[in-house]
Length: 186
Image (tube, rainbow, N blue to C red; front, side):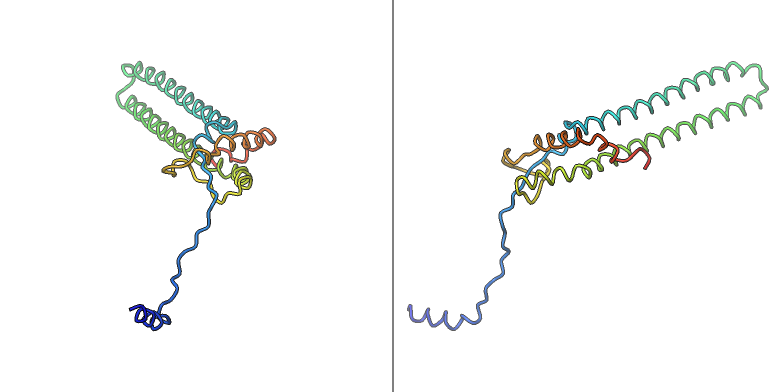
């Protein structure tokens, strides 16, 4: 029986090929919370304050425009009884157009603000990429994964705090880093 098996293996030998299986090497993987990196770094906090200041300006502009429209509408209402109907109608239509145009302009400003915020946040990660690369080199890592993408991981792989410290140090040495994120409406 063994002899038959040996003969069979010898006969099949030339037909059996080694299969190509992928070869995986162990990779050093690090985990980072992009949210925490942004929200808890000095640069991220400065960006958040800048965004809040821009929102405040937009809100204040909206309030000022709204207040001016209230005054203008009140004045128009007072003129209603003293003007001929055709003249009043023309003034009312011009006022309505002004309000519609102002709303459209405000919506455009809102959309621009949102676009600037999104662009600035994307730029944030571009600007800090060299800092994250330093952390990768320190650990001889091949990849950094966002915490939200990891189903389960060893908390020792999370370098968020360390990355924040590196980023804060780099930002204190180069406060112009915030200007590398671009200015509004670029």
